[in-house]
Image 1 (cartoon, rainbow, N blue to C red):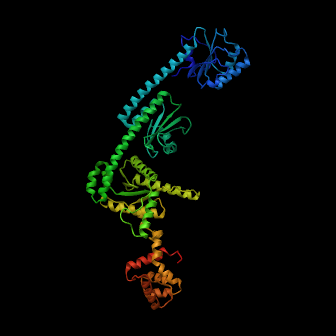
Image 2 (cartoon, rainbow, N blue to C red):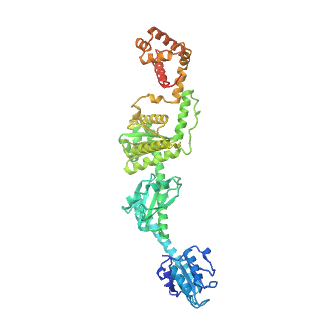
Image 3 (cartoon, rainbow, N blue to C red):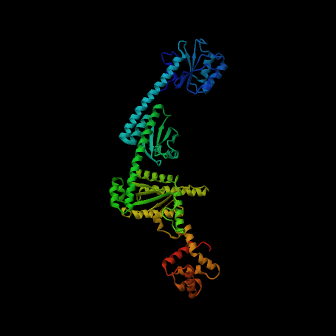
Length: 557
């Protein structure tokens, strides 16, 4: 405990006598300061015991003493020591009365007790208190280290809660509660998830102080980890602000958890390298080799149906879509001629998705394979498992946020995720699953969706896939000559072609739809072949023309 006025009064060598404020002697003393100024307040910081002889004070003037004492109390001075036998033989009644009115402890200092002795006593008590705090802090550090080594983060939290006489909780990278001590603190910690999420948005190291959910405790939040995005967070709840010893304990816990987290990151990086090797073998059609490399780490994941997830950031996906459109409209350049996709901040959405699926898998105890692949993130997760569910829920939340931004006429985040999800597959069909995820990703990119499942592509119509600038450009180029011919009034080749194709080349039925003779229709189809330089007997030509007509159905020639 720091020194108090009571401990100084009880100090046998000082011989101090209480003349006022006897009921407030338990106040801590930060320092003892001597000042004979008529107004020492500008030089006070609060918490001082002020020592005076009243050299420049009219200590017998009641009004002057009331003003003097009031200013001291307002400045946070905790006590006033008055030396008798120097300027006054005893403390003037005016000062005693003013001190009593304001509740300021007033101590009588005998002539034989120098102010230096009081300053030394305060300094020695403060030093002793700091030494006790440091000693207790080192003891707490040893205990926390022992518990961290023997019982992991759970043991460390239990020891920390005992050290601070409160509770402690650990949150993972997604903001979910991982462990608490004591157990009753679990519900308390869960209600602080929003505060933890706000803390995670700040660069590490970061900390914050928040009130408890019922405002009966004080909670400190600290980020854990050395990277820009915190890997975890620690919450410490106490009934009062932390003392020096408790602060040492909290800092020790943060350091130990950071070491654990960084070691976990190294292990995680090694696991990712193994996962990348397993993925390459699966995609190369070597499931047996993949099982051998996966071992116990990912082996269980390959024993049941799994899903492939391929994700890109919005900026990278937009650049890829632009490159693909360019390739479809013009001949592809030689190898290496494509424009690189956007990078930079685009990695954040992928990192967030990786954290979400890994945290969900860890909480449910299931294996998940997460492999960063350049501007992409590839995830292999159990079908129907927590990781896939977390991915779809995250995508749904992003879709909702985008819709809200549209309703409020705000600009949506340009660097959102674009995700493709395969149908359930097994090790033998891993390559097909990856292709499905890529196809779903391409459709999501074209439709402006966050996530598309491959199973959704088989339902509905293929026609929405034609709503693409590159497809429309191809269709326009293919049919332009026919539209230009019809614009001169020399025939109706586009409508005739549409009717003939819709009737699968049946002349009589198509002619009846057009209200013309079948010989007229035959002549028009010959003109189509002549103008396009293509044979309508070729099924590929008929397919391309039909899709081109569908793609331009809503456009004017």
